[in-house]
Image 1: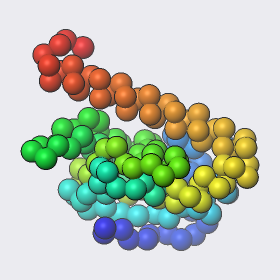
Image 2 (image 1 turned 180 degrees about the vertical axis):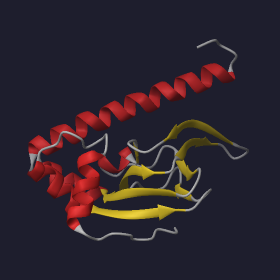
Image 3 (image 1 turned 90 degrees about the vertical axis):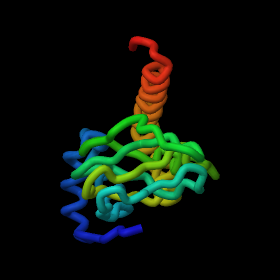
Length: 161
């Protein structure tokens, strides 16, 4: 992958997390804990970030640009949802030994914060209030992804949504 670390500065990452829709409202100590786990990365247009079926390892918070969440078959890929700044992907990295369900591709040059899934799970176990917040917010993401999948398939079947 063409990941490029941009800013290793803890405070800068803290500020990004403080303003990101997924982490907004978390306590300062929780933001500090997440900032210690975060790395800022860049993906170039059309770069494949996550491959369906591979072991999930990272959780991403989109900060600039956009990505497409795609359902892939041997013959084609269907865009299920486009994600913009403030949105996240890679939620399966929060699960034990879980494979990625969707592929994710950069739609344009995209910047994101990458959090190591194992380290994030460990932080959530250590700080149960952080764990509750992260898992509640991740469940909202999963529910949104399921809904987006339902809508896309209904459209493909000609059903008015």
